[in-house]
Amino acid sequence: MIRFSPIVISLLVLFNGCTDRQQPLSELIDEQLSFAVEQYKGMHAIVPADRLPRSTHMETGELVTSDSRWWCSGFFPGSLWYLYEYTGDEMLKEMAMARTALVEEEQYNTGTHDLGFMLNNAFGNGVRIAGIEAYKPVMINGAYSLMTRYNETVGCIKSWDHGNWTFPVIIDNMMNLEYLMWAFRETGDTAFYDACVSHSDNTMENHFRDDYSSYHLVDYDTITGEVLGRQTVQGYADESAWARGQSWGFYGYVTMFRESGDNKYLDQAVNIADFLLSHPNMPEDGVPYWDFNAPEIPDAPRDASAGAILASGLIELSGFVADEDAETYLAFAEKIVRTLSSPKYRAEAGSNNYFILEHSVGHLPKNSEVDVPLTYADYYFIEALLRLNALN
Image (cartoon, rainbow, N blue to C red; front, top):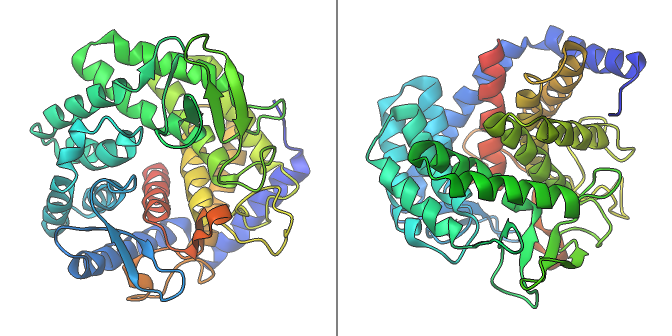
């Protein structure tokens, strides 16, 4: 485990201490969540009733929406549920229910691994926050749909059905395991648990390099279960550390420790966190470049979504480790949140098509969604604020 020196810890604390004098954390949290409420009420008003927000057009700045089949479809209803949890505002609950209903048909979708993002964020938050029992059958159906993509020989859940790969598994897939662990607890079906453990273990063995950075994609042979190849599709190069992928993997192992109690997942999460926080190309303000090995650093685009995911995961991780480590992780998470709350990343009221954050990167190699708002960046920013709020 990488340990930060007392000097580094002191600098982190000093940074946060200085900003605390400018604005207390509790005040900042309330301000940002209140802003999010107004933005998302505005967004609900402009997005057609049968559509879901996705991003803005890179050239025109026009709002880009999607139907329920887009992998991000659950983030907007999930964010509305989070904001309802914070405010108790019944209008937000009605909005959340209306947008959640749009995703219901995806419970039968066996053609994607993203059902955790789609169904768990929407229906799962509705169950947890509002106690809506009618959502549970949808969740269970969706979990069984996701399990059709699990291959026992490989020991993983298949990610993509396109491309020239045999059985591609991307690091993002770690984010779906929370959903299947919920299904295990709800149904008692141990197949869910076994799949989550197997997927986590194989990903830990095959996706990660010695320094705890990860590849984006590992391709498996379905006959032998052996690795056919490793690469990074959405990052700079196969051997680079694509920033959002690092955050997905980190967050996924924090979640698997919470859900399973197995210390090997906690150790993995800590090792990934220490790789990221001590990386020489991690910017001082905590919001990563789109790839830690991007050749144009320091002029490379930043990815607010990678920062928001990392911040939320660090806040949860801080509750699982010793006090000294907890302070380090929490201080870094707070630094990210303060940066994202600043005018550098947070939109002005009523602008940005009512998204909260600016400057995220979707798929730079394909010149798709570069330096634009993204619905999942907002979701994890809201989640990080709520997690900080729970600690204050």
